[in-house]
Image (cartoon, rainbow, N blue to C red; front, side):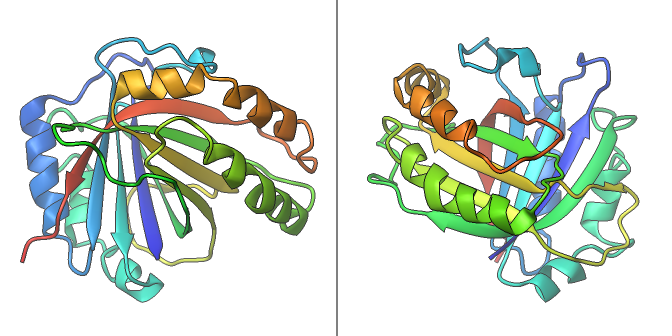
Length: 235
């Protein structure tokens, strides 16, 4: 599976997307041809305790669109499509003037013990992480990370989804800026408090112990907890 990531950032860290603009973005995303699922990410309304709060509040808005293959994804990245419109604001003041980047990546899903959210869960929370890179040896980096880190992530209490995204080559005509982070990953929980509970557990110590064993890389990493809205494709 292929994932497109688009990130909308305010350099001052003050902008927020209004609910009506989020609804309009969901309509645009739902109409993207061949998309199998869209995820809209917005900052949390409240502060959540997690080990990387110094990374800041994160983007004002981000999205992840899933496609069955690369050609389907590239077909949605033309200059006349809905995503190109959204990249330039889509006529919505909440998005106008934000810095917009995009990247297409390979999706690698890993098993969790309980995937289903409990009844009554309406707004899951995603922990979005990215490593800008580069690594000295990308093959060595990927081998270590994929063989060791997901099995530790799986032991977080009540983690519902684990995905790791690795780089690929792609073509597009979007007006936003292309980025090529060497890796992204995402953990999904039932809500902000579930995420805070998991990241306050002793599992984070095992994550840090593996982190110091990573093959050499530059660029650090960033971690952002985000509310997550699921958008299904229109029939």
